[in-house]
Length: 139
Image (cartoon, rainbow, N blue to C red; front, side, top):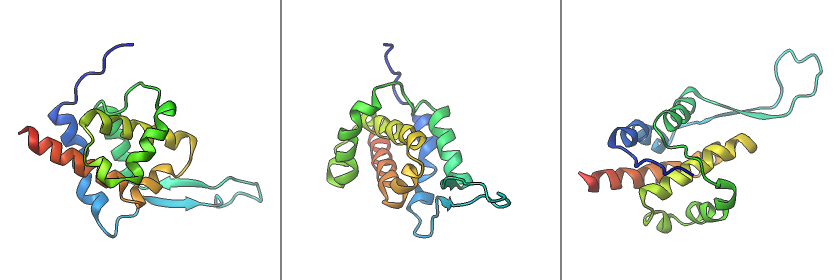
């Protein structure tokens, strides 16, 4: 397995621009779509439709090296500790934040609305907040 390159300052800045948005009290990540209009009675499964900002955030993660190849399925239990404990998140290094963001982005592919839940609970904003503090300390 090849080594993951370090996270650059521009890569950090590319996703930190979303922090004020995700911290905003009136931020809405999207909505659940229960039935497609004009479905003609066909059964459709509910799915989560993300807003443009969340799509741009996911694009920024992909375009800036935040999504890395690793066994995120095996790491889910560890990720849950950071979700459940903001104090633990305050000790996370940039590599851990990268694994968390990878896990959440990948989990969304298997569990519709996962990212919406993490955004709604303030976890993604907390991850970005921790990243902002690490970025500031590096200056």
